[in-house]
Length: 394
Image (cartoon, rainbow, N blue to C red; front, side, top):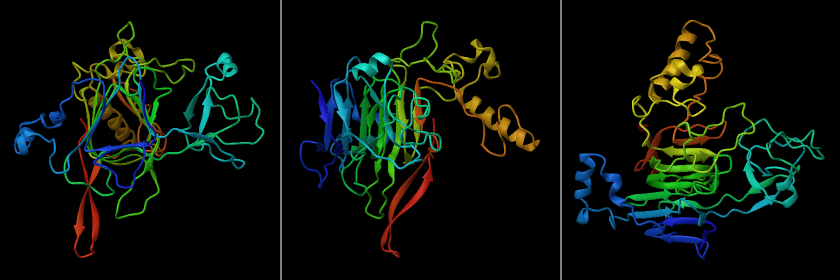
């Protein structure tokens, strides 16, 4: 059995959507397993439990426009696909920056001969350019590229906590489990267009990338494609991650061109486009626990096992991050270029080369601010306004 939703999943309905390409309901469930408690998001603190008890019947179900979306595929085989995924060949002017386009990736000569390929997103800006008539020697040096042909993707649809153009009253919860985990890898993640208008987004053992879709709001016209827009909190949970025989995580060093990630290597979410309002990030890998979750280097090993990263031995992820910042500040104070700081007059600090069970990949040129907005009505201006505020990362 395969469930294919061509365009979008909407919690709470969507008045403009018609046909079988859209699923819309107050409780949308595409899930094989029975183990999920929608109230789980409220059980992390006593304060939240008290809030939960104050709801009708002590549950969020049916409360004030509450919407629930559960998408859970089998972690050993994939059956669910969401978002319209039709690639169209595009004719490009000479010298076009190929950032944002796609190409057909072939693993080897046999794959090319048999027409076996996957589409790859070009996430680097100002690096690859189109030239008509380019040969094997002169075309862009993209891994697995055999033809000088590029594609455009129709990026409408995705997963929306509610289907309304503005904020709907109530609690909007979305759980994605096992999406792309069984058959896809970090090198070739499954595709979803976007996550939008969700209070809590829980991601367990997935492997996908978000391309982007427009943020439809009533108070502004914005055609920018967003990978994520207006998500209150992202929770990442890793349960069935595959380790190497030596206990290290699968990890690709920068110079290991022939390396290919295996399936189930990470609970992974890639962001190929702009991020618009994410209020908080939570991971089940502790950010500040050096005993139970020590920092792992670019090889997936704890620092003590690698001479190159001995300086990070017995450190947590938080401590390593702080060291990067301290090295940068010290180098800047002394007016010198430090190995760990990089070019202090250009980049802020050296790239963090660590790895973890939960991983978010952000395309070059983009960044994630941990901030959200509160939409209120300004009586003086007689329109809805957005007030930004910052949230935590844990």
